[in-house]
Amino acid sequence: MTAWSERRYAVVDVEGNGHQPPDLVELAVVPIERGVVGELATWLFQPEQPITPMAQRIHGISNDMVKGAPIFASLAMDVQARLDGAVIVAHNASVDLGVLKRKLPGFVPDDVLDTLRLARRLLPDQPNHRLGSLVSVLDLGRDLPRDLRPHPSGYDALVTARLFFYLANSAASMPLSFEALRDGPGGGDALF
Image (cartoon, rainbow, N blue to C red; front, side, top):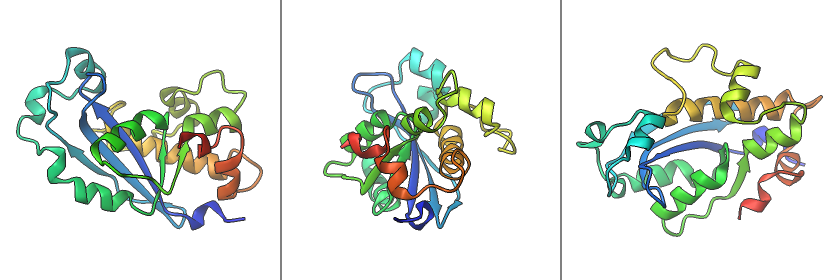
């Protein structure tokens, strides 16, 4: 068994332009190495199609905000470097993973853990496993910078990293092994 903290993780969150399939507007990555949550990295990208009014209402990112932003291809190597060799962690990971795979053709993560599935398994008594509900119940938003608010990817990636840390350490009587996180019912193995 491998202690969960022996693996390297990249907690990700994406925001899209509201089209189907969504194009990437914002990406955040929070590394977790040796069991320590690292520094947040975020990027705004100019999507191929404009951001829809509905998407803008959800994440607060306007077309004016991304007008001068780079296209994804110009930063793809930097993004890829942050993800390579890491276990990808996200809340409702299939959405984030779908966007990343479209933007990074050939990208195959080492492994994927979905905090939504993990929370359902490890916190079965919670009436709701949406990220916002878990942030509130577990007080995961404490001490975050005041300019961070729910839904932009930076906030969501940070609180997802905190949720993952909580689930790996506090939801059981002792820290879980990586295999217990991955292979238990609701683990990440079904995402491939």
